[in-house]
Amino acid sequence: MKKNSTLLNIDNMVKKDLILINDHSKTKEELFKKVSNILMKKNIVKESYYNALLEREAVFPTGINTEPINVAIPHTDNKHIKKASLMVVKMAEPITFKQMDDPNKEVNVEVLFFLLIDEKEKQSKFLSKLIMAFQNSDFLKSIKKSDDKHEILNLVKTNLQ
Amino acid sequence: MKKNILLVCGTGIATSTVVGEKIKEIAKENNFDVNINQVKVTEAKSHLKDNKVDLLIATTQLPFEVDVPYVKGLPFISGVGEEEVIEEVKNILKD
Image 1: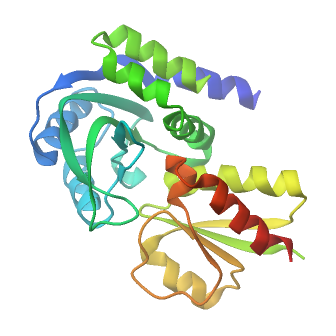
Image 2: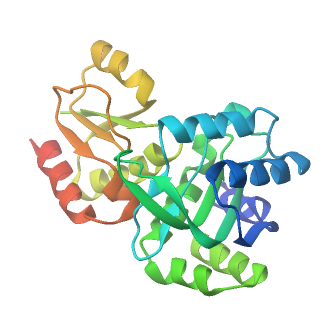
């Protein structure tokens, strides 16, 4: 039973309208604002999400060196989240993030996964699968290459099954 | 003997959860008896004060010195250097 509900979750969590491609934001603030506005309109996050996300990123950055294509996984406390989801953003130009394990180092990020987690127990398998997919460099390369939201959606879903 | 593992990340919800899944796998494969706790980095110090911890794994930088066995958690997330940290974890847990 549990397995089934995990599978159902993926379709509920990852949707075409939560994929941004070739975004031109120049700064984290600009990108976070854009993402927060989209998520707020869809009733996925609370108003407090933007500030919480920005604050968390400043103290505990989420850039990860997954060369050749680096990622970031911005996320914040679950109290700011209304509905578990995943937002995927592919940048037009890399954006600079600080590295999670060493905030003194910077990393140029091309693909971002905004983790919108409401209950960690429910989404642990989902998170693990997503993050394990980063270790498959074809996954990130294919996302980078694609200019089609539908294709990116399918790539993400396939890697989460 | 059961080993207490403390997983630490910025929110105590995302990357520590992923590391936890991997530690569970390692424990299962090697028949290690483990008890896993997850905390935010801001709660780590008080958890260490009040609880016995045999292994600490953090995906963020720790803002304090630790006197328990410590392994970096980011390799479990990025995949870079993962085999080395798996070996470190096994060595700490096998005793």
